Length: 142
Image 1: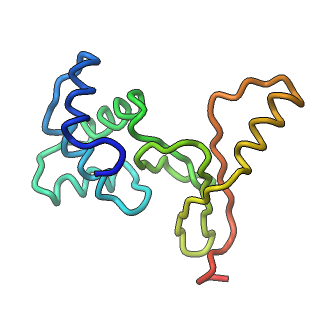
Image 2 (image 1 turned 135 degrees about the horizontal axis):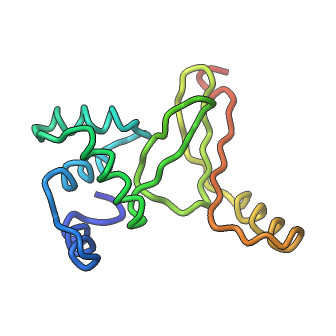
């Protein structure tokens, strides 16, 4: 588990006044093990496949809670696409989405910082979060 171990998740939930439940643990485990962005339906199916009995409504509530706690992040990666979920990451990452195969990669670089600086100094706009998605064709589909 990457950013936050399960013990840390439990401590965070408890200190914020939330119970540690099987559905919350199950959704967290699925997100930590995921090697790609997942839809809510995929998270639900993966929790079921792992032997957890978690209904879709609990998955939605848990993902919303994890996002509120800063542990998960929802991104809309294509026009008309449903939110896709992943572990939270600093917004210095941006998404490269292949329009042919649907592959999503993170790109880390200074571009997001430049956008933040431009909006702040050039427009007086205080940025809370940057969600940058670039569509095109990946190296394999190109």
